[in-house]
Amino acid sequence: MTEKFRETAEFLKQQISIRPEVGIILGSGLGGLGTKIENSVAISYSDIPNFPVSTVEGHSGKLIFGQLGGKNVVAMQGRFHYYEGYPMAQVTFPVRVMKLLGVTSLMVSNAAGGLNPNFKQGDLMLISDHINFFPESPLRGKNLTEFGVRFPDMSKVYDHTYLKMAKEIADSLNIPVQEGVYIGSSGPALETPAEYRLFRIFGADATGMSTVPEVIVAHQQGMRVFGMSVITNVTTPADGEETTHEEVQDVAGIAEPKMTAIIKALIAKL
Ligand code: HPA
Image 1 (tube, rainbow, N blue to C red):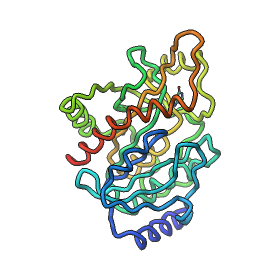
Image 2: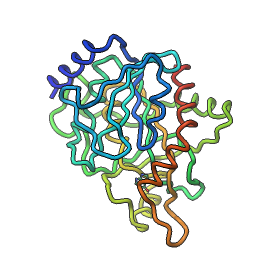
Image 3: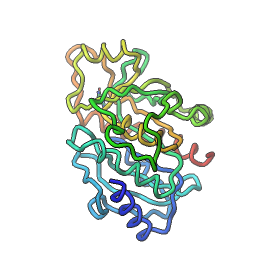
Image 4: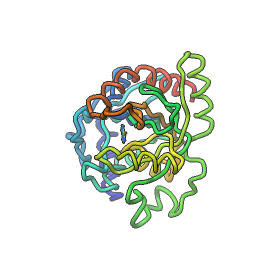
């Protein structure tokens, strides 16, 4: 596997002169941030050796290199989800490659269902912590010691300084934000009402099908992590209301400029 990471990183270094220090993962319906990247060079996943190819509608599947907030960045427009059938090593493959490209900070976004009764559709939630409810860990298997330790401490995964800075930025931009715990599980079925209640009892504020695997890998290899969820649906909807993928993407798209403004300002301050 390590050989593959290196091969992919070497390929990208040959193709692109930009050396990113910030990595960005854009969630469902949140790809708009990609258009704010200046002097951008994009490469389709299908043109990158060893890269999995994204299969979900609304995930266009490319790496975008360029500048955002005055820093060199690489953004994933489209991520790989466990529910698509990829092994965890593939879901997190780009995060390993980012490390080899020199990325030291990772900004992760996602669309999520709001479990906290105070949350409304369209809210932004800064992620303060997560619960791994996927059936496996992306670190399962032989440890890749060149990336990090076998048993990484997980007590401070979401960088406290970034969280504080993001709150101050949101305040100064007059963008209201929530803060809370994200629980990640495999999907692709959304949760039953009983499962939403269970996740709430677990202590989670929002639920989704991504982010946790990438963040575990990023943290293990020493990256500083910032995460944000767009609450695309509430999980205690009025009677008879159902959640569709279109709705999730539409709401994410509406909230996206606010998320982008915060992430851009945060990157500028790093
Ligand atoms: N559950 C899981 N994933 C999601 C949801 C949800 O309610 N909304 C957006 N992604």
